Image (cartoon, rainbow, N blue to C red; front, side, top):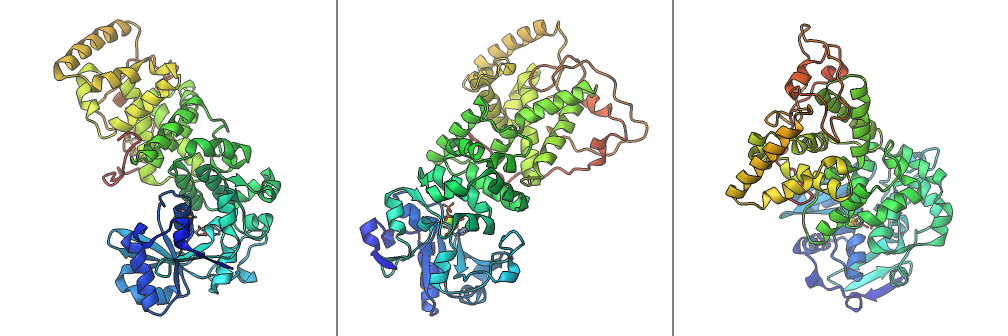
Length: 484
Ligand code: ATP
Ligand code: MG
């Protein structure tokens, strides 16, 4: 074990937020050892700004709770730890862990419970990568380095502690973490990891809960190196495990949005991971909509059913929380509205809560070469920068062009109707769906001139969509993006 002088590596107490210092001080005063560990220390040494700081201590969760009282909550079952709230910050405080006992390991070697307390030496060996296993005591100004992690930082190498195959079997999520850190930090993956990182190994991710995989996917989408990680997910066969039905290919649209997302993060802007899910699933959604249209479902109905199907399939890999689902489906629905708005609804549409995300989606589709947007991405982009008078002029022009186009029938969309409708069982007097000739209600204009309301009332009572009751969700505390 080496004790490094923190200042030599650019670490100083004044670079830390007061919340993490308070956590260290409270634990120290209560008679425990306490360190900052993990990504916070790693990123500070690398000259990056850490996303958060994690603390580790020899106090048990109950003792941490006693030290912080109401500011502390114990969370987790598989991996129990304390959440300490200091002002607006949340600090995760873990207890030193010893190797897990045999009886909490699955037949495949996966650790099912990891709550066996131990010493700092044992704790270090339980961490994933050497660069994540440095312990920083800010009051003493020292870093404890048990495994020459500092050399790996200098040579930019991602090295797992222990045998890579065993470490992946214990927790397959470490495969995702490997790719995440390789992409984010631009580190090389050590040879011994590459040797065991096979498609068979990647299949172990099937045993991971969709909740945990969703959390990991969010971290991937928001780390600022999305464009780097996507090819790695394909190369190491991880894509298939995360996105069951999405073809493993970085399409121009996906690539464009990934770059855009990374740029926004670099500029410190907010992003909504749901937006990237909407992008990833888009092609599948268009394909599935076409499938229902071919079955003669009315366009609005085809889109609603396709949205349910595609998201339901994705949920078998990563859960899609309800508010995320609503957001995704509203962004998709916005595509139709923005493509063919009624002139009198244009202003209201531009003020719609989901306009920003829907427009960004449309614009990025167009910019990545999707011609089915028919230039409406640019139209809306220009529209937003016009004065009130100019807006009237372009709307009048749009109206004339639209009227010309309507000589060839198009689907007229009711831009005032809710984006994702509440689906309630209908009376037995509901009419049966009429056959329709729409070719594509999503990517281009449909061929029908029915209103979408009419389309929805055309659903038979036994149609599966009516069997799913949905309630409108509260979206007030969700940040929408990517350019909001
Ligand atoms: P980030 O910048 O994403 O927060 P991080 O390294 O801090 O990166 P966390 O998920 O916050 O990642 O975890 C904190 C620390 O806990 C890690 O640095 C690592 O030491 C340890 N850790 C987290 N997940 C695992 C795991 N699956 N196996 C072993 N150790 C882990
Ligand atoms: Mg962290």
